[in-house]
Length: 283
Image (cartoon, rainbow, N blue to C red; front, side):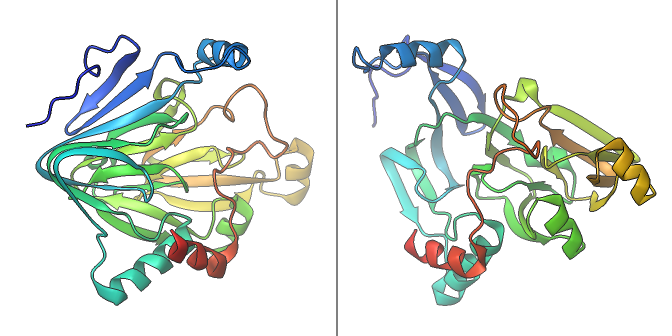
């Protein structure tokens, strides 16, 4: 029997969203600042820059999380690596190397609570089945946690040019199946555009799409049919999504300042496959 005091009745902790075993909580203010930090804390609060956390309530079920995301557990909760033998570890290391995600995603199961580390990112609980039978493909760093019933898959770009020119990387992580996942988004759900395509296309200048249906075909093309036309309109290359499915689109980069290349800021810089494998072993 576990009882957690000063949690559900904590006025500084607000539950923003709850689906299945996942609940998103937001700290309204940082109550432990010093006098020198108080002006920064005040303006962070006013600009909605607040700490958010995910609480997983386990009732004979299991969840998979990003490596290093666990803050504490309470109750009969057991952790495992989610890796079966050396072969499974090497497969996970390779998967992590090419996608930029952690090589090993630990699995927590049992009866009790699992609290994830606080983050200033926006947390979104999503039903993966709503993305269709081909699941969802996501940008690096978007995955935080999911129900263990979901399957992970590494998705390669249809062409090398789409990876290099599109700024999306050569491989991406995909989730498939029926279950819930928690995403760390650079912008809140209220700010995301959801573009739904029915045998149509969407062209985006920059990698502003943070997630898209696995049924969509992604390519990089000139914004105009002719090179001269692309030079005249000033757009150059654009990311093109074709088919039937949906896209989560950031209307701008996080905050009010835009980077020179008008792209969403990645949380991790790519260091190549070898470097990522070394980092994966160290995780």
